[in-house]
Length: 603
Image (cartoon, rainbow, N blue to C red; front, side, top):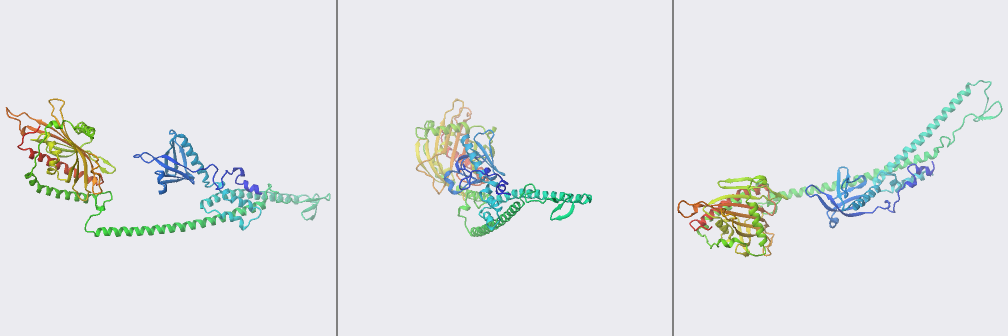
């Protein structure tokens, strides 16, 4: 076999794809840019910074985060790129079970990404003969026909990648199979020639002796009756069987097998080195894990030795060391202590009751003019529209407490693991008017008389006679963090559109921001949207008697939307709300009845 024949046994020279000095296909460029990547059904498509480089597709959350490492990557050697059938901007890239769903900003950019990915995938050359030629293995084979030497296998040791050596082995396999076929044809031809010679010899022996030529031999020649030498058997020339150069094929076969052995030896060396490297990594990781486990056990033992729980791990938070049952027990115990303190001070509060003049009802018919006027009006209308709606239907209100005339409803709502359950309570109180209930609920003069959860409060700014911004800090209930609230409180009177309907009194409290009360690290800032809505029903007195407090009934609707501003177990928050809201409403309405008893009725 000639040199050219040996080269063409695995492909023509023209089949080699054009490559640059680094061995990459001509036209391959690295590509990076913004693509939309499908994350999940909650967040949908999100923009990500995608980088195509060195046959690898990687993505980052943004271009600014590339220095912190990618969030995921795909090797494109065996990737399948699928343009979407209907979406002209979408392409799907899959490797085994991993699928990336990507969208470009327009079809042109999608085509650009697809072309670049295909080029990088083709350049990977895994298992291709073209990559073997790149690494010089074919050159070793072609040079082997002129004589095999130790330097013939030097090219097999130039590569340092196991993947390159595996590619060489695949090409060696193809070459060896073709050489085996060629040699087999040669052996078959030799076998056919020997069979023909034996048949010819048998035929000569059986001929009649009279016709038999002279048996005087001269090497391989006989003298016939005419005295002419004839060649008895035709010898087989080196290229007499199908034109095959047996010596050349044998040398090439020897070179191929030597190359296979050399490459196998190199693969074994690489795998041994890689095994040693991975074993060192495993040992290092095992040692690191052992130290971490020991540190964890040591820290856990130290925590168990502490006689008090003052650290953040024992307070609220998703990583709290207190389970939900212990958390609830701690909160309940703290609330019980507060109730006992409140009972002891209740008598003293009644004895030192303060009183302040109640402004006439006309003052509350408007909210005045200030920077929050539009917002207050919007919140008032919202409460009048939604808070008085019936709890039935599709609103999903659940009745959680029913005590006499009082009913408390709840809708379970969570956002990012934080409980945001809206609460609605309805109640009927005899002997008081809606004006009186809202007055004592809004006026901060009486706040400490009936509110037991406040540590301190102050009026940050008075916007009008019936609108103020209030900042208050609530008592801490361990292990929960302490909370504070900054809110605007407004009191309004809504005139009835029908003379047969009662007027409506309303107090709405909703969170705002103010430069004089910024959030601090000491407390968690909670957000609130609360409405106290009251209507007074009057039953006619008997005869000519004047209307007394026995003839009036106040219908109360109380709604509360509270964002606690931080995490706590959902079961604990819901249990505390179920316990505290009815207590608060009964405590406040009883206070209003005590304050108004024996006083003129204020409609």
